[in-house]
Image (cartoon, rainbow, N blue to C red):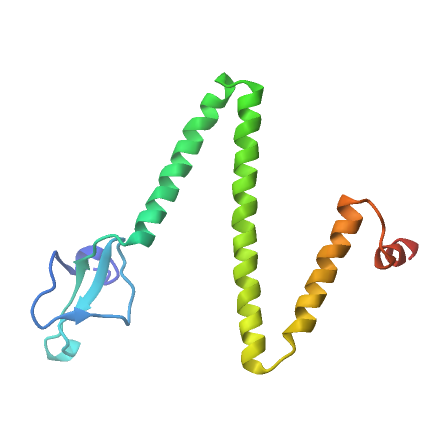
Length: 156
């Protein structure tokens, strides 16, 4: 019998007396937490799985799966929608994706700044370089004006 299979372990709905959560191994089954009775395997030790209630993170994952399933079902219904409705759905999806990207970018930037402060590095130079990069991108992409750096690249 394979010891990694869930059926090998006892399943518990509540934590038995004297048992504790075992953080040394992961559960082979979703929704179950590994537990043990605190003894050595050579001295009567037993392992089991404790049912865990879903946390907010698990609930979010389940919602994501539900949205993905709904999206697949919706793709079949997109043929019944007008062009304006499909365009509105696409614009909303794009706006939400951009907001999520900005949030992730801001979190990453704040972590970088925190590390710079902790290490005593000059974070103002780092922020200035990022601002110059954004300004340069704005000049070349939005205003369609090549910057000095862009012109050098074109001349090569």
